[in-house]
Length: 253
DNA sequence: CTGGGGAAGGGGCCC
DNA sequence: GGGGCCCCTTCCCCA
Image 1 (cartoon, rainbow, N blue to C red):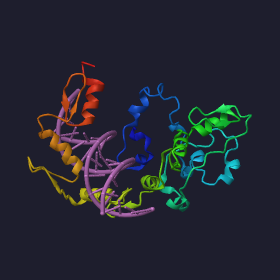
Image 2 (cartoon, rainbow, N blue to C red):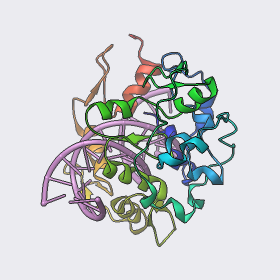
Image 3 (tube, helix red, strand yellow):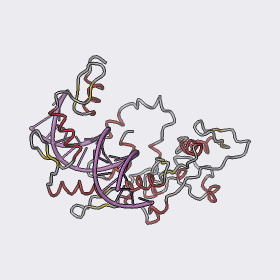
Image 4 (cartoon, rainbow, N blue to C red):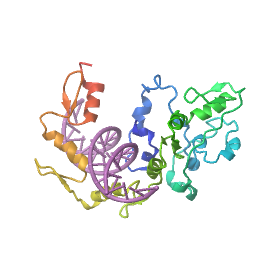
């Protein structure tokens, strides 16, 4: 899954170069016609609520499911999750209840979960968040848990709570104010301030602040690299290099 | 242009 | 259930 899917990146100091992505034809569009309509995610200060995926109380469903075009329900604007109100505490999250099965006369059916709706707009709104996972989870005896900040869904409340931390960012660096989802991420960040590098390479004594970066570094000492091109058998120390190679450099593909 | 380093994100697993 | 840790992945920057 591309990281562009993760809204958090928008307010970090480092920003991916999305202009490149946006300028390219999306190769997955044809394959995934029902992918999430990212451009229609709520992005303003009201982004704390993602309408159709965040219905915790079945009793308010009729009000929430009055026909509204997806674009009208998702005003454009920069996403500012840091401005979320206190009502978006982790206690708010819960089990998503999709709209109950509508009347038999409804003839607009979701191809994923087979729920029917009385209008194309209602179906379209439902499909903003429906991936069919809830139905699969229900069929397996478990329930689906949807994030209210993004279309992600999980099979356990614990997993959802863990994910929601990536939106609420409760761990704040006292030095620079940068916020992180987990304490150990913050600790890793603090090393960038202190210069601490607890992970040393046994080959060259070079030290790293991050174990994964040491692991990647160790690949540079390896005769046989971990990632191999299936077309030309050339090996690379990093998957990202292999990807770059297959996309642009491999003459055998 | 390529490869490597730095920083950061996520899910999964274990305690 | 929450915290900590591990592993993997991604992105940016630079030599």
